Image (cartoon, rainbow, N blue to C red; front, top):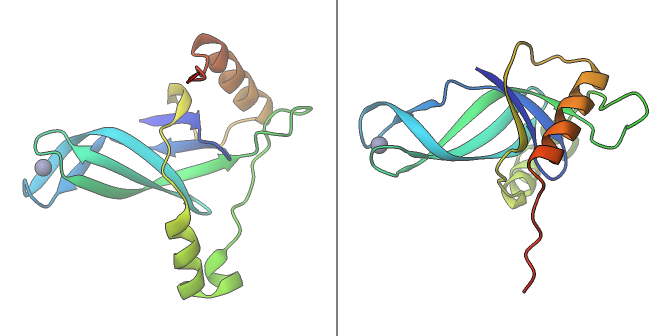
Length: 139
Ligand SMILES: [Zn+2]
């Protein structure tokens, strides 16, 4: 299935079957508590738990990123800089490890394509934000 939603820095459209190979269960299992972080152009890194045993699972999912702050024409596709090339693999790894995983907010399920018109991306995300406003916790 193809889905689209937002993490703090980007809107991301990705392809997932909501399953993963679990080493502990020695087989393909459903996943829960999916969270995502930017990895590189064309790929997002997913962290989830095995539905059966709770083991943490990591998977790359095919992804397309969009810019959240290009409101005039909608949310335009954005290319993730190639950190391996820019900084070398060692430094790139340190930086990626410092990035956090986030659940997908403003989720839209069952999109047909990862490449979506900027105007449509903006419409989907903005209308989904209205349906599911992010609640601010007041201490
Ligand atoms: Zn398992």
